[in-house]
Amino acid sequence: MYRLLIADDEALEREGLELTVERAMPGVFRFIHAGNGRMAIECAEEHRPHIAIMDINMPGIDGLEALRELKERLPDTRFVLVTAYDYFAYAQEALSLGVKEYILKPAKRELIIGTLKRLIEEIECEKRTRTEELELRHKISQLMPLAENELALMLMVDQTVDSSASQLSEWLDFPLDQGSAIITAFDGYTDEQDKKKIYDHFRSYVKTHGPNSIVSSLIDHHVAAFLQKPSTTSQDDWRQLIKHLVQQLSELAHQQFGIKAAIGIGSLHSGEEGLRKSYFEAVFASTLRKRDGGYCYFDELKSSETGNASVPAVKAEKGMLQQTYVISALQRIREQREVQTHTMLGRAKMYIEERFNDDLSLEEVADFVHLNPHYFSKIFKQEYGETFIDFVTRLRIDKAIALIKEGNLALKEISFEVGYKDPNYFSRVFKKITGVPPTEFKGQK
Image (tube, helix red, strand yellow):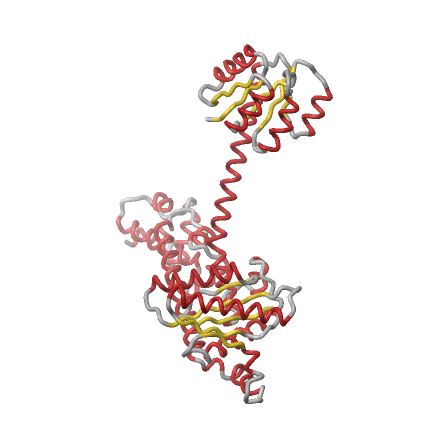
Protein backbone atom coordinates (compact mmCIF):
# COMPACT_ATOMS: atom_id res chain seq x y z
CA MET A 1 0.00 0.00 0.00
CA TYR A 2 1.33 3.42 -0.98
CA ARG A 3 1.26 6.45 1.31
CA LEU A 4 -0.44 9.52 -0.21
CA LEU A 5 -0.16 12.93 1.49
CA ILE A 6 -2.90 15.44 0.62
CA ALA A 7 -2.00 18.99 1.72
CA ASP A 8 -4.77 21.58 1.27
CA ASP A 9 -6.16 24.25 3.59
CA GLU A 10 -9.74 23.31 2.62
CA ALA A 11 -10.97 20.16 4.36
CA LEU A 12 -13.66 19.54 1.73
CA GLU A 13 -11.00 19.56 -1.01
CA ARG A 14 -8.91 17.01 0.89
CA GLU A 15 -11.87 14.73 1.61
CA GLY A 16 -13.20 15.02 -1.93
CA LEU A 17 -9.80 14.12 -3.40
CA GLU A 18 -9.45 11.13 -1.08
CA LEU A 19 -12.94 9.90 -2.02
CA THR A 20 -12.18 10.28 -5.73
CA VAL A 21 -8.92 8.36 -5.49
CA GLU A 22 -10.28 5.62 -3.23
CA ARG A 23 -13.22 4.95 -5.56
CA ALA A 24 -11.00 4.73 -8.63
CA MET A 25 -8.12 2.88 -6.95
CA PRO A 26 -9.54 1.05 -3.92
CA GLY A 27 -7.02 -0.23 -1.36
CA VAL A 28 -4.02 1.25 -3.15
CA PHE A 29 -3.32 4.20 -0.83
CA ARG A 30 -3.13 5.04 2.83
CA PHE A 31 -4.15 8.69 3.07
CA ILE A 32 -2.47 11.37 5.20
CA HIS A 33 -4.05 14.83 5.52
CA ALA A 34 -2.38 18.19 6.21
CA GLY A 35 -4.22 21.52 6.51
CA ASN A 36 -1.27 23.85 5.87
CA GLY A 37 2.38 23.93 4.86
CA ARG A 38 3.74 23.42 8.37
CA MET A 39 1.55 20.36 8.93
CA ALA A 40 2.55 19.07 5.49
CA ILE A 41 6.23 19.21 6.47
CA GLU A 42 5.60 17.50 9.82
CA CYS A 43 3.36 14.78 8.36
CA ALA A 44 5.77 14.13 5.48
CA GLU A 45 8.73 13.76 7.83
CA GLU A 46 6.78 11.39 10.04
CA HIS A 47 5.09 9.21 7.40
CA ARG A 48 7.51 9.61 4.45
CA PRO A 49 4.83 9.46 1.73
CA HIS A 50 5.43 7.94 -1.68
CA ILE A 51 3.36 10.71 -3.31
CA ALA A 52 2.38 14.17 -2.01
CA ILE A 53 -0.38 16.28 -3.57
CA MET A 54 0.13 19.85 -2.36
CA ASP A 55 -1.94 22.97 -2.87
CA ILE A 56 0.24 25.99 -3.66
CA ASN A 57 -1.96 28.59 -1.95
CA MET A 58 -2.04 27.73 1.74
CA PRO A 59 -1.83 30.14 4.69
CA GLY A 60 1.50 30.51 6.46
CA ILE A 61 4.05 28.25 4.81
CA ASP A 62 2.71 27.84 1.28
CA GLY A 63 3.07 24.79 -0.97
CA LEU A 64 6.21 25.93 -2.77
CA GLU A 65 8.01 26.79 0.45
CA ALA A 66 7.07 23.44 1.97
CA LEU A 67 8.15 21.74 -1.24
CA ARG A 68 11.58 23.37 -1.17
CA GLU A 69 12.18 22.00 2.31
CA LEU A 70 10.75 18.53 1.68
CA LYS A 71 12.63 17.93 -1.59
CA GLU A 72 15.90 17.94 0.35
CA ARG A 73 14.66 15.64 3.10
CA LEU A 74 12.53 13.29 0.97
CA PRO A 75 14.28 12.97 -2.41
CA ASP A 76 12.31 9.82 -3.34
CA THR A 77 8.85 11.34 -2.78
CA ARG A 78 6.86 12.34 -5.90
CA PHE A 79 5.23 15.76 -5.61
CA VAL A 80 2.12 16.99 -7.42
CA LEU A 81 1.30 20.71 -7.14
CA VAL A 82 -2.33 21.83 -7.30
CA THR A 83 -3.64 25.41 -7.60
CA ALA A 84 -6.72 27.28 -8.70
CA TYR A 85 -4.59 29.90 -10.45
CA ASP A 86 -2.73 29.36 -13.68
CA TYR A 87 0.36 31.31 -12.67
CA PHE A 88 3.32 30.61 -14.95
CA ALA A 89 5.73 31.76 -12.23
CA TYR A 90 4.49 28.96 -9.96
CA ALA A 91 4.99 26.41 -12.71
CA GLN A 92 8.48 27.76 -13.42
CA GLU A 93 9.59 27.50 -9.80
CA ALA A 94 8.00 24.06 -9.45
CA LEU A 95 9.96 22.86 -12.47
CA SER A 96 13.18 24.28 -11.01
CA LEU A 97 12.51 22.22 -7.89
CA GLY A 98 12.14 19.05 -9.95
CA VAL A 99 8.34 18.80 -9.86
CA LYS A 100 6.95 17.48 -13.13
CA GLU A 101 3.26 17.26 -12.19
CA TYR A 102 1.17 20.45 -12.05
CA ILE A 103 -2.66 20.30 -11.83
CA LEU A 104 -5.13 23.16 -12.07
CA LYS A 105 -8.32 23.27 -10.02
CA PRO A 106 -10.94 22.10 -10.58
CA ALA A 107 -9.05 18.99 -11.64
CA LYS A 108 -10.82 16.34 -13.64
CA ARG A 109 -11.03 12.89 -12.11
CA GLU A 110 -9.31 11.28 -15.12
CA LEU A 111 -6.36 13.68 -14.83
CA ILE A 112 -5.85 12.99 -11.12
CA ILE A 113 -6.12 9.21 -11.47
CA GLY A 114 -3.92 9.16 -14.57
CA THR A 115 -1.26 11.20 -12.78
CA LEU A 116 -1.27 8.90 -9.74
CA LYS A 117 -1.09 5.75 -11.88
CA ARG A 118 1.83 7.17 -13.82
CA LEU A 119 3.69 8.04 -10.62
CA ILE A 120 3.07 4.57 -9.18
CA GLU A 121 4.49 3.05 -12.35
CA GLU A 122 7.60 5.23 -11.96
CA ILE A 123 7.98 4.10 -8.35
CA GLU A 124 7.60 0.44 -9.33
CA CYS A 125 10.06 0.85 -12.19
CA GLU A 126 12.65 2.40 -9.87
CA LYS A 127 12.04 -0.36 -7.34
CA ARG A 128 12.64 -3.03 -9.99
CA THR A 129 15.77 -1.25 -11.17
CA ARG A 130 17.04 -0.98 -7.61
CA THR A 131 16.35 -4.69 -7.01
CA GLU A 132 18.19 -5.64 -10.20
CA GLU A 133 21.13 -3.42 -9.24
CA LEU A 134 21.34 -5.02 -5.80
CA GLU A 135 21.16 -8.51 -7.31
CA LEU A 136 23.90 -7.59 -9.76
CA ARG A 137 26.06 -6.14 -7.00
CA HIS A 138 25.51 -9.30 -4.95
CA LYS A 139 26.55 -11.51 -7.86
CA ILE A 140 29.59 -9.36 -8.56
CA SER A 141 30.60 -9.48 -4.90
CA GLN A 142 30.49 -13.28 -5.12
CA LEU A 143 32.43 -13.36 -8.38
CA MET A 144 35.14 -10.91 -7.35
CA PRO A 145 37.14 -13.39 -5.20
CA LEU A 146 36.93 -15.94 -8.05
CA ALA A 147 38.18 -13.39 -10.58
CA GLU A 148 40.94 -12.30 -8.18
CA ASN A 149 42.01 -15.89 -7.70
CA GLU A 150 42.03 -16.41 -11.48
CA LEU A 151 44.28 -13.40 -12.03
CA ALA A 152 46.53 -14.45 -9.14
CA LEU A 153 46.93 -17.90 -10.70
CA MET A 154 47.79 -16.31 -14.04
CA LEU A 155 50.55 -14.32 -12.37
CA MET A 156 51.74 -17.41 -10.49
CA VAL A 157 51.76 -20.03 -13.25
CA ASP A 158 51.34 -18.14 -16.53
CA GLN A 159 48.20 -18.31 -18.66
CA THR A 160 45.62 -20.79 -17.34
CA VAL A 161 42.50 -19.95 -19.37
CA ASP A 162 41.61 -18.33 -22.69
CA SER A 163 41.38 -14.81 -21.25
CA SER A 164 44.40 -12.57 -20.69
CA ALA A 165 45.72 -11.19 -17.43
CA SER A 166 45.41 -7.65 -18.77
CA GLN A 167 41.67 -8.09 -19.38
CA LEU A 168 41.08 -9.41 -15.87
CA SER A 169 43.29 -6.76 -14.29
CA GLU A 170 41.27 -4.04 -16.03
CA TRP A 171 37.99 -5.57 -14.86
CA LEU A 172 39.30 -5.85 -11.29
CA ASP A 173 40.73 -2.32 -11.38
CA PHE A 174 44.18 -3.74 -10.62
CA PRO A 175 46.62 -2.25 -13.17
CA LEU A 176 49.68 -4.40 -13.75
CA ASP A 177 51.99 -1.51 -12.88
CA GLN A 178 54.60 -1.54 -10.15
CA GLY A 179 53.91 -3.94 -7.33
CA SER A 180 55.21 -6.70 -5.10
CA ALA A 181 54.10 -10.22 -4.23
CA ILE A 182 53.98 -11.73 -0.77
CA ILE A 183 53.66 -15.41 0.08
CA THR A 184 52.29 -16.44 3.46
CA ALA A 185 52.78 -20.05 4.58
CA PHE A 186 50.60 -21.05 7.55
CA ASP A 187 51.70 -23.94 9.72
CA GLY A 188 49.91 -25.66 12.57
CA TYR A 189 46.31 -26.23 11.51
CA THR A 190 44.58 -29.31 10.11
CA ASP A 191 40.85 -28.70 10.31
CA GLU A 192 39.11 -27.51 7.14
CA GLN A 193 37.00 -25.09 9.17
CA ASP A 194 40.15 -23.52 10.60
CA LYS A 195 41.50 -23.28 7.06
CA LYS A 196 38.52 -21.20 5.95
CA LYS A 197 38.68 -18.94 9.00
CA ILE A 198 42.40 -18.34 8.55
CA TYR A 199 41.99 -17.53 4.87
CA ASP A 200 39.00 -15.22 5.45
CA HIS A 201 40.88 -13.32 8.18
CA PHE A 202 44.02 -13.08 6.02
CA ARG A 203 42.19 -11.85 2.92
CA SER A 204 40.05 -9.42 4.90
CA TYR A 205 43.09 -7.92 6.65
CA VAL A 206 45.05 -7.49 3.43
CA LYS A 207 42.05 -5.88 1.72
CA THR A 208 41.29 -3.58 4.65
CA HIS A 209 44.75 -2.52 5.80
CA GLY A 210 46.94 -3.02 2.75
CA PRO A 211 47.22 -1.25 -0.62
CA ASN A 212 45.19 -2.24 -3.69
CA SER A 213 45.62 -6.01 -3.97
CA ILE A 214 44.47 -9.34 -5.34
CA VAL A 215 44.64 -12.48 -3.22
CA SER A 216 44.84 -16.09 -4.38
CA SER A 217 43.05 -19.04 -2.82
CA LEU A 218 44.71 -21.04 -0.03
CA ILE A 219 46.81 -23.76 -1.69
CA ASP A 220 48.70 -26.24 0.49
CA HIS A 221 48.75 -23.84 3.46
CA HIS A 222 50.05 -21.00 1.25
CA VAL A 223 48.39 -17.77 0.09
CA ALA A 224 49.79 -15.40 -2.53
CA ALA A 225 48.92 -11.70 -2.53
CA PHE A 226 49.91 -9.20 -5.20
CA LEU A 227 50.10 -5.61 -3.93
CA GLN A 228 50.03 -2.52 -6.15
CA LYS A 229 52.34 0.37 -5.27
CA PRO A 230 50.65 3.78 -5.50
CA SER A 231 52.45 6.08 -7.93
CA THR A 232 52.82 8.71 -5.19
CA THR A 233 54.60 6.34 -2.79
CA SER A 234 58.40 6.27 -2.81
CA GLN A 235 60.27 2.95 -2.87
CA ASP A 236 61.51 3.42 0.71
CA ASP A 237 57.98 4.17 1.94
CA TRP A 238 56.73 1.15 -0.02
CA ARG A 239 59.22 -1.14 1.70
CA GLN A 240 58.14 0.15 5.11
CA LEU A 241 54.46 -0.21 4.21
CA ILE A 242 54.93 -3.83 3.13
CA LYS A 243 57.02 -4.68 6.17
CA HIS A 244 54.41 -3.24 8.52
CA LEU A 245 51.65 -5.19 6.74
CA VAL A 246 53.42 -8.56 6.94
CA GLN A 247 54.33 -7.96 10.60
CA GLN A 248 50.66 -7.43 11.33
CA LEU A 249 49.72 -10.56 9.35
CA SER A 250 52.23 -12.60 11.33
CA GLU A 251 50.84 -11.29 14.63
CA LEU A 252 47.28 -11.93 13.43
CA ALA A 253 48.07 -15.58 12.73
CA HIS A 254 49.71 -16.01 16.13
CA GLN A 255 47.14 -14.14 18.24
CA GLN A 256 43.95 -15.26 16.49
CA PHE A 257 44.83 -18.86 15.69
CA GLY A 258 48.01 -19.71 17.60
CA ILE A 259 49.89 -20.68 14.44
CA LYS A 260 53.11 -19.55 12.78
CA ALA A 261 53.13 -17.68 9.50
CA ALA A 262 56.29 -17.69 7.36
CA ILE A 263 56.05 -14.74 4.97
CA GLY A 264 58.21 -14.01 1.94
CA ILE A 265 58.24 -10.62 0.23
CA GLY A 266 59.21 -10.26 -3.43
CA SER A 267 60.97 -7.25 -4.93
CA LEU A 268 59.18 -4.36 -6.59
CA HIS A 269 58.58 -5.12 -10.28
CA SER A 270 56.42 -3.93 -13.16
CA GLY A 271 54.12 -5.69 -15.61
CA GLU A 272 52.80 -9.24 -15.74
CA GLU A 273 56.22 -10.86 -16.05
CA GLY A 274 57.61 -8.59 -13.34
CA LEU A 275 54.88 -9.53 -10.88
CA ARG A 276 55.43 -13.19 -11.68
CA LYS A 277 59.14 -12.74 -10.93
CA SER A 278 58.24 -11.00 -7.64
CA TYR A 279 56.03 -13.98 -6.80
CA PHE A 280 58.87 -16.48 -7.29
CA GLU A 281 61.15 -14.30 -5.20
CA ALA A 282 58.53 -14.27 -2.44
CA VAL A 283 58.27 -18.07 -2.63
CA PHE A 284 62.03 -18.37 -2.22
CA ALA A 285 62.09 -15.88 0.67
CA SER A 286 59.23 -17.65 2.48
CA THR A 287 61.13 -20.96 2.49
CA LEU A 288 63.90 -19.35 4.56
CA ARG A 289 61.46 -18.72 7.43
CA LYS A 290 59.69 -22.07 7.36
CA ARG A 291 60.83 -23.18 10.79
CA ASP A 292 60.59 -20.10 12.98
CA GLY A 293 57.97 -18.01 11.17
CA GLY A 294 58.33 -14.27 10.67
CA TYR A 295 59.09 -12.62 7.36
CA CYS A 296 61.94 -12.38 4.89
CA TYR A 297 62.39 -9.62 2.28
CA PHE A 298 64.03 -10.91 -0.91
CA ASP A 299 65.79 -7.56 -1.49
CA GLU A 300 67.56 -7.87 1.86
CA LEU A 301 69.07 -11.21 0.85
CA LYS A 302 71.17 -9.33 -1.70
CA SER A 303 72.92 -7.42 1.06
CA SER A 304 73.40 -10.39 3.38
CA GLU A 305 76.63 -11.12 5.20
CA THR A 306 77.87 -13.39 2.40
CA GLY A 307 78.53 -10.27 0.36
CA ASN A 308 77.59 -12.20 -2.78
CA ALA A 309 74.45 -10.65 -4.18
CA SER A 310 74.26 -13.05 -7.12
CA VAL A 311 73.96 -16.23 -5.07
CA PRO A 312 70.43 -15.81 -3.74
CA ALA A 313 69.32 -14.26 -7.00
CA VAL A 314 70.54 -17.25 -8.97
CA LYS A 315 68.90 -19.61 -6.49
CA ALA A 316 65.67 -17.66 -6.69
CA GLU A 317 65.48 -17.55 -10.47
CA LYS A 318 66.91 -20.94 -11.42
CA GLY A 319 66.19 -23.19 -8.51
CA MET A 320 62.86 -21.91 -7.36
CA LEU A 321 60.76 -24.43 -9.25
CA GLN A 322 62.55 -27.14 -7.28
CA GLN A 323 61.08 -25.84 -4.03
CA THR A 324 58.58 -28.21 -2.49
CA TYR A 325 55.86 -25.56 -2.24
CA VAL A 326 56.02 -24.54 -5.88
CA ILE A 327 55.84 -28.10 -7.11
CA SER A 328 52.96 -29.00 -4.81
CA ALA A 329 51.17 -25.74 -5.51
CA LEU A 330 51.33 -26.27 -9.25
CA GLN A 331 50.17 -29.84 -8.81
CA ARG A 332 47.28 -28.80 -6.57
CA ILE A 333 46.23 -26.07 -8.98
CA ARG A 334 46.25 -28.59 -11.82
CA GLU A 335 44.33 -31.14 -9.76
CA GLN A 336 41.79 -28.58 -8.61
CA ARG A 337 41.21 -27.41 -12.16
CA GLU A 338 40.78 -30.97 -13.40
CA VAL A 339 38.28 -31.74 -10.62
CA GLN A 340 36.39 -28.51 -11.28
CA THR A 341 36.35 -29.17 -15.02
CA HIS A 342 35.12 -32.75 -14.62
CA THR A 343 32.44 -31.68 -12.15
CA MET A 344 31.30 -28.81 -14.33
CA LEU A 345 31.25 -30.91 -17.51
CA GLY A 346 29.39 -33.68 -15.69
CA ARG A 347 26.69 -31.17 -14.69
CA ALA A 348 26.54 -29.88 -18.26
CA LYS A 349 26.24 -33.42 -19.65
CA MET A 350 23.39 -34.25 -17.28
CA TYR A 351 21.66 -30.99 -18.21
CA ILE A 352 21.92 -31.85 -21.92
CA GLU A 353 20.70 -35.41 -21.42
CA GLU A 354 17.64 -34.14 -19.56
CA ARG A 355 16.75 -31.48 -22.15
CA PHE A 356 18.17 -32.64 -25.50
CA ASN A 357 14.67 -32.91 -26.99
CA ASP A 358 14.03 -29.21 -26.27
CA ASP A 359 15.27 -26.26 -28.31
CA LEU A 360 18.63 -26.42 -26.51
CA SER A 361 21.55 -24.14 -27.38
CA LEU A 362 25.24 -24.23 -26.49
CA GLU A 363 24.87 -20.76 -24.95
CA GLU A 364 22.12 -22.00 -22.63
CA VAL A 365 24.22 -24.91 -21.36
CA ALA A 366 27.33 -22.72 -20.99
CA ASP A 367 25.28 -20.23 -18.98
CA PHE A 368 23.99 -23.06 -16.79
CA VAL A 369 27.56 -23.92 -15.74
CA HIS A 370 28.67 -20.23 -15.71
CA LEU A 371 31.23 -20.45 -18.51
CA ASN A 372 32.02 -18.51 -21.63
CA PRO A 373 30.33 -20.36 -24.58
CA HIS A 374 33.56 -20.50 -26.63
CA TYR A 375 35.57 -21.87 -23.72
CA PHE A 376 32.82 -24.35 -22.81
CA SER A 377 32.65 -25.60 -26.41
CA LYS A 378 36.41 -26.13 -26.44
CA ILE A 379 36.70 -28.12 -23.20
CA PHE A 380 33.49 -30.07 -23.93
CA LYS A 381 35.03 -31.42 -27.13
CA GLN A 382 38.30 -32.14 -25.34
CA GLU A 383 36.46 -34.14 -22.67
CA TYR A 384 33.92 -36.06 -24.75
CA GLY A 385 35.61 -36.21 -28.16
CA GLU A 386 32.73 -34.59 -30.03
CA THR A 387 31.21 -31.16 -30.37
CA PHE A 388 28.15 -30.00 -28.48
CA ILE A 389 26.01 -30.23 -31.66
CA ASP A 390 27.25 -33.74 -32.45
CA PHE A 391 26.57 -34.83 -28.86
CA VAL A 392 23.00 -33.50 -28.91
CA THR A 393 22.39 -34.96 -32.38
CA ARG A 394 23.58 -38.39 -31.28
CA LEU A 395 21.29 -38.32 -28.24
CA ARG A 396 18.32 -37.37 -30.40
CA ILE A 397 18.96 -40.02 -33.06
CA ASP A 398 19.59 -42.72 -30.41
CA LYS A 399 16.25 -41.78 -28.84
CA ALA A 400 14.57 -41.83 -32.26
CA ILE A 401 15.95 -45.30 -32.97
CA ALA A 402 14.61 -46.53 -29.64
CA LEU A 403 11.16 -45.06 -30.36
CA ILE A 404 11.10 -46.58 -33.87
CA LYS A 405 11.88 -50.00 -32.42
CA GLU A 406 9.02 -49.62 -29.94
CA GLY A 407 6.68 -49.02 -32.88
CA ASN A 408 4.13 -46.93 -30.97
CA LEU A 409 4.61 -43.57 -32.72
CA ALA A 410 4.54 -42.32 -36.30
CA LEU A 411 7.78 -40.91 -37.68
CA LYS A 412 6.38 -37.37 -37.56
CA GLU A 413 5.56 -37.82 -33.87
CA ILE A 414 9.02 -39.24 -33.23
CA SER A 415 10.55 -36.22 -34.96
CA PHE A 416 8.75 -33.87 -32.55
CA GLU A 417 9.47 -36.13 -29.58
CA VAL A 418 13.25 -35.99 -30.05
CA GLY A 419 13.40 -32.24 -30.65
CA TYR A 420 13.03 -31.74 -34.42
CA LYS A 421 10.15 -29.50 -35.44
CA ASP A 422 10.73 -30.17 -39.14
CA PRO A 423 10.23 -33.89 -40.04
CA ASN A 424 12.11 -33.43 -43.34
CA TYR A 425 15.15 -32.06 -41.52
CA PHE A 426 14.87 -34.91 -39.02
CA SER A 427 14.89 -37.37 -41.91
CA ARG A 428 18.06 -35.84 -43.37
CA VAL A 429 19.87 -35.88 -40.03
CA PHE A 430 18.75 -39.46 -39.35
CA LYS A 431 20.08 -40.62 -42.72
CA LYS A 432 23.37 -38.78 -42.17
CA ILE A 433 23.90 -40.57 -38.83
CA THR A 434 22.56 -44.05 -39.61
CA GLY A 435 23.11 -44.23 -43.37
CA VAL A 436 19.42 -44.84 -44.15
CA PRO A 437 16.32 -42.64 -43.94
CA PRO A 438 13.95 -43.28 -41.01
CA THR A 439 11.25 -44.79 -43.27
CA GLU A 440 13.68 -47.43 -44.56
CA PHE A 441 15.05 -48.03 -41.08
CA LYS A 442 11.53 -48.55 -39.77
CA GLY A 443 10.81 -51.04 -42.57
CA GLN A 444 13.99 -52.99 -41.78
CA LYS A 445 13.10 -53.27 -38.12
